Image (cartoon, rainbow, N blue to C red):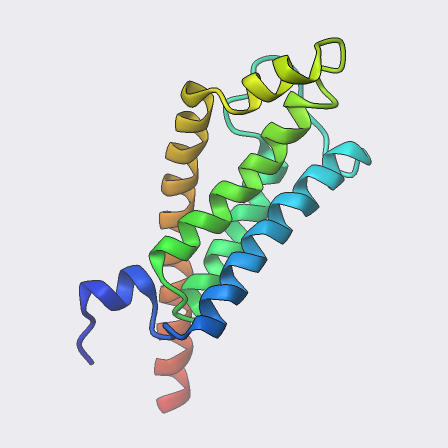
Length: 145
């Protein structure tokens, strides 16, 4: 079985249905992460947070599932990033409630902070995607024997 770069990056299912499904999943993960922080289901350890642990775990889990079902590396990056973005939204809006809404929005859309979360999303999403792909291949190989 030969894998092309296009299949790894975009996934095997490239129909509009799957693209809409993955995009919806990414948005839902961001919202769920945001709501989980607001409701104190997820907590912030305190201090300077470079990688929010709970949001990262949600993104890693979703990206591993994407790798398992051959969804594409771009999708893995997207779901990993949006879960981190949910934490950023929590920190920007309820976390900085003493600021005005334009100041909160400016913080949320700050390119430097978004770049950090994008880099983290790519790194965590790549690792999780590879793990999910290996688990799929391992289960395929064990079922053949």
